[in-house]
Length: 399
Image (cartoon, rainbow, N blue to C red; front, side):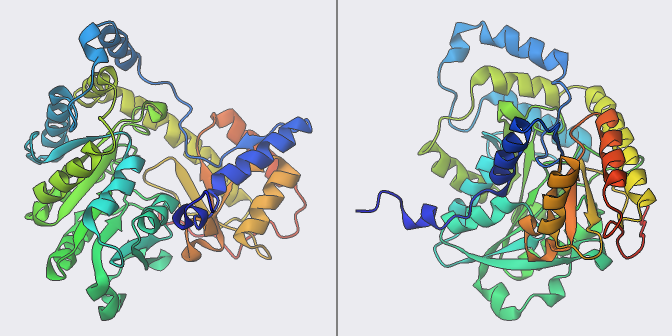
């Protein structure tokens, strides 16, 4: 008798796990590995958030179960954040739900919306957890290719009518992981129009909504008039407040979808630890100065890495947000061969673009998750590598 379900056995190994295995092996060999693979912020959680956690964890009442949908304080904080930051009004009771991080929310959202065999439109390249979520829900993955010539924005007119008819859900992600692409509200307006026309739920993964540079401000899909008729948006405090290990996020928008997800989750979990929810509420209702300070750090890191890549002739576009840089691999390499070469010859981990879907082939992703000094070391090591094959076919700058 098989002890592992077919559903789990058919899941591909999580690519980042394999690179972490290689990392340990290299470190055991004495190599100073610089890990730019996983998008895990290294900056500290703001002190005022930690202080609030410390205060709340001392209250005996907070060690009880949370309400299934999340505590009132956190849900009201999410609604307040949307009103202040986006000008979007939300009902904390019916249009906001606490998540144990947005990754959990994505997996459970897909199961809440689709039936086995239903199609889900997924960005390609896109976050690998999307495809895994569809697989676990017995859905059909229908890839939505994102054209770099179009700024990695979806072109809905290219989707086959048959694919649309089989679909029930569409996932979007801006600012984007892995491409760092950013958009304006017009793209979301097109997405909502498309979703309404074809009776789809559209879910926008806004994990990087607050990590932006210069004058750019990421929009919310809920700013589109009538978006709540078909749209939900997932948010996370992991990246914007450097709270990855805290596992706290939210989903907002369409009441029917929120209720369905709440029903599913009430049978799976009992929400997040109350002190974490209350500390997260304090973060969301803050003046966001801590976020701005951290964005300045990421901007400096981005400039360091971007300029270094350009100096080497590697084709790369300057991002307006996220903690990533998306660049073309040098001539003569595949995404994986270049990532392997970087680890073997430079002791640097980058993520091959094909890890994010077939449209990611030919690219690699860098996470700005180490100090600028370490990024300067990365550039130095790359320049010391054999020059053959380390130049891509020209430069491109959309800034």
